[in-house]
Each structure stands twice: as structure tokens, then as C-alpha cells.
Image 1: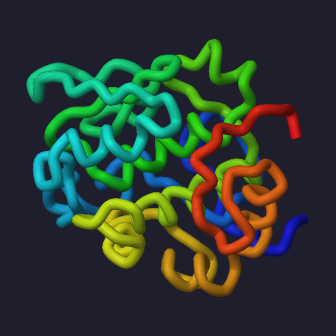
Image 2: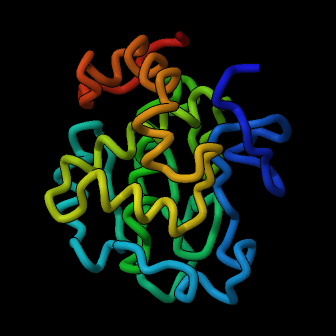
Length: 206
């Protein structure tokens, strides 16, 4: 079993993975952490605080179209439901209350998946545990290109929301336990040797 696979999946798993272990456990909702609502659980950055144009300017480099829906409707294509971002083909669907970490996480699923999966994408991004680790790494790096967010704030928000790593925090994982995620992204041309985004989509089965 790879070195940083540690935390077991909850409910239906992470984007279609039904059993196994993973370095990160994404909680389905704040109620799993002992809170009555997401609002009580998380003081995290949300779309309303930074604005759609900032997100659009970043993600259009990948051919993603960001669409904001009304706050009183369910987000189409949302795997987790509630205020979490949705994916339908190359459309990333959000509301004003969607957390930035959720937007970047779903965007990175789109970036990291194979072209075949991207063509039929609707709600469930799929992928394996190695891809999920890559997604988590890349979303942190993309946050560094959002001046109003930054890597440090995104890692803080990931901790608050309930991403759980075996070393106890997102920062500890990112700085000391994410070599396999780095290598996975590098081999697929999604980051450069310094770890920065290449602004390219995964374009093969590798």
C-alpha cells in the first residue's frame, strides 16, 4: 500500500471510489464533524467574498466555463450537494455561497481526469486515490494564483472544512508527505518541476 494512504472513505466514497484508503478524507457534510450546519462548521472563503471574475480569470486558462446559479436553487452537477461546486462537461457550476476550496477542488478534478472521462463528465468526476491526491495538491497551488486567497488560506480552509490527512493538517501533508502527488502531476505535465501549474489539461491515459 502506498506510503501516504491512510484515511478510509466515508459513505459512497470520493467521486466514485467505493472502498480503500486515501491520504485525504473529504467529509460529506459538516454534520459528520459534529456541527448542525456548514455555516457553524466553517468560516471559509466563499465566492461572494472574492467574486466570479477572479475565479473565471484563473480557470478559463483550462477551458473551464464558470457559471453562477441563483442561491435558492440546487447546484447542477454537484457531487456533494448543498453549496458545493458542480461539474457538467467543461462547466463549473457555483453559487455565491460556494466555498473557494470546493471550486478549486472540482476544477482540479476536471484538469486531472483523462480526456475520455472529461467528455462524458456529469457530477461524478471519478478517478483513483493517486488522482485524488494530485487534485488536492494542485488546488493548493492554484490558490496561490488567486491574490485574495493564497495557498496558506486555502490550506486553512481545507482543515476547517474537514479534509483529513494522516499528519494532522493540510499544510503538514503538502509540505512533507505529498511527494507522490507531486510526481503524479509532474509525470502528466500538469505542473512544472517547481510545482507550479502548467496551465495544461491531462491529455492521455498516463
